[in-house]
Length: 332
Image (cartoon, rainbow, N blue to C red; front, top):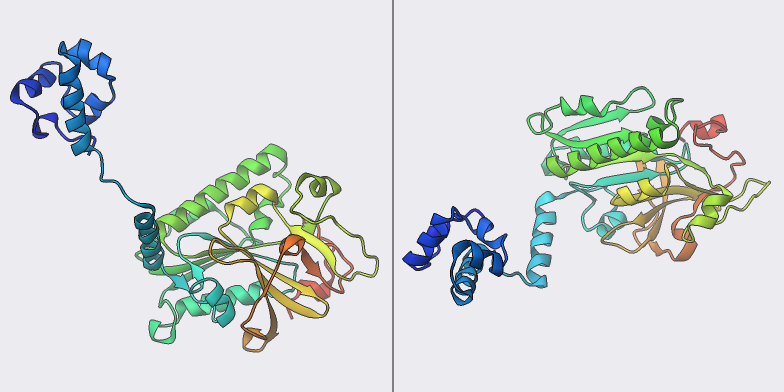
């Protein structure tokens, strides 16, 4: 609209000729000047300038939209983008259909809690035919513990290959190398986050990344009031952990699912979502994969939203992944 020609805007022939003589041919060029600047440049009176600008603005500016219209457009866009159902009824209902397309979803939890099983289940569902509730597509599953390169993803033709899901397991491993420290580590993380988010938005497919946990420092506990203070428990019960990669990474993800173990029971927590309050669902892992014990999530409040429990495990998982007992390294 800004490039619309002034000669086509219904101004009087004389006024249109004045604009053309001063080499002002588009709405953008006219509206980028003030009324006084146009008076001097066109050598016409204020009334003529005001009338011309009013006409140009009326035609060049897009029609107004109400808040209701904008909300309806957003809902239609989300519906068009779609969701990947997790097969867990209660969680899918809370997410209004499942893992949303076009955004970054994070799965965080201690080793052995079931993150990989969850990702495997999503991969299976994404590859199933649509008649069985799947997306009938290909899946890119990247094991970052081996090697990861954002640039290599640029070479993959996602649309032509009918890719319907990308899983990165795990994102924290990218930052655990000896080369990644201080500012360079943050720059590297920023590059990967920016690329992954833009890839999700442009391809309109779900991207799921897993993240590790680590112990919380006293400094972090004092910086962020919404994060819990670490409580040392020599018996190893309900050790409080936090997601790796810090607060900047946490703001980058649209959806955060936390897997934890508390009081002898495993839970999936919907800790961050633009559509749902924080909820916790008890689950078990069987030969068929992850299954919810019930479809009614318990709403979480306060510090429990960000706490990550690891019941009965005395070793705190550090950022470099050391300190994990063999029992917890291998998924049950």
